[in-house]
Length: 363
Image (cartoon, rainbow, N blue to C red):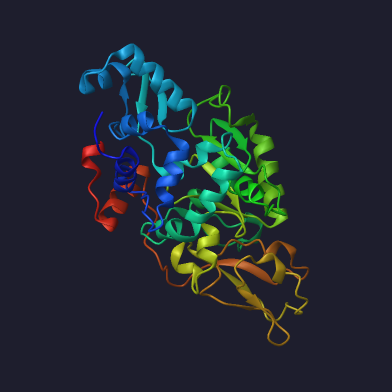
């Protein structure tokens, strides 16, 4: 044991991971960690590696008895504090450090109570916005397929249906952001069990997952359609390959989208290559699309709907309710953001450079 406050140390470690975990003046970032971890768990987490190690490797490196260490690591994994997976090469389970978001936060789904939900709410208003403002951004928007111009060629990683079709396992979770808002007395009006979890190359990946209900590919496609009909925005990790989730998000609950929506120019803080186009010859100004836009990007100043290109994120949920088929998604003439990183490692490398952090000691 050391004299250093383990929660302060852990906060620094989590902020060294490219995803980030910004400190806030009132210390809410420490209160979050105090709720999730015991001091012993926090101290051990600080010493883990992102790449993962077996309990034997960790025990040797830290000069700790392996039996006791493995028991503690298993408890910490069950509490969603660390990552763990069965390594074929090692023939044993590995344990590793995990980012706060996407990571530790989402794994608190079954543990979250009203007290923790309120602590998180305080953090969202201050620290979480800093996470969303760094390049490359965490989320990319996937446009609703039905709203895309039929002649528009887009990448497979920009099609939610394609991500589902190419996966080996599918699951669904209750949205932790919606649960968090409900626990502070602000329940969401949208469907809540809408987080699609994917395993690109593994079958039966979620059979033993306590947080994820295994579903079929067909059920996943139906859930996707249900979410977009409800007006939710499809989002996923801002990478081109190996997607592990499709969030169906709203600006009233989602930690990323509600931070972005509150800005003057939401489009600058989320990855999108698309924008909505209105055919003035078809639009009747009926207004059916207005309440569908969660970013306030649509207006009818006279008789035709007008799109604010600085607020539109190209999600397409407005177009599918237009009775005149006057709206469609097109590629934006100039992409405001660079291409999505190729994979998670590429994303983390670019993010580390952008944030001027060096996570090499954590690898």
